[in-house]
Amino acid sequence: MHIKYKNELLVLVSIIFLIGSYIFKTDALNTSVQSLHETQSSLVELQEAVSLEKIWSPKDIKSKLKSLRSMVNEENIQWKQRGKKISIKFIDISSDKLNKILNKVLNIAIQIEEMKIIRDKDKYTMELKCKW
View 1: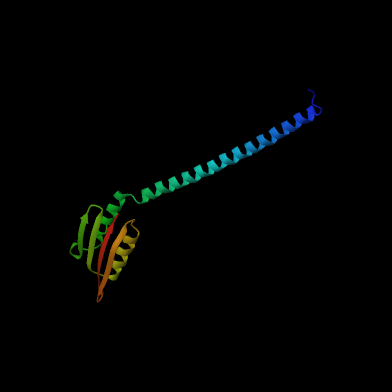
View 2: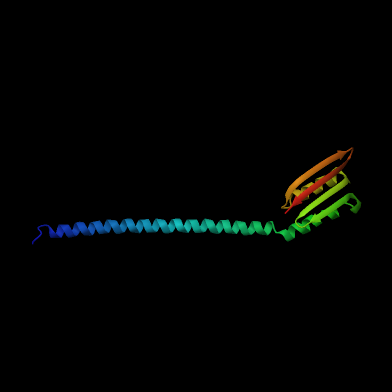
């Protein structure tokens, strides 16, 4: 059996293989590039999580909260701490002290559960319950 267009048939088959291999190559390249982008974004997210963990470290929070005690006299503060929960009551403090305390509390990475500020003439009482 003799095929008349044997050379043309071989060229056609080789062109089909060429097109198939080109499609496979570009698909593999796109898959590897997409995988690389996913890996890089995962790495960035992991680095952000590590940096946030350093900011929100519990050891640091405990010492920052203890520094609130030194901002007022001992007779003007009631302090109750149980584990990672704390209840603080500042009694008869001035507006300047209240502002300093509030700025410090808002810059500490804690979860405020309850905050009450009561004004009595020119003095303030502040109750704070938080956890970390």
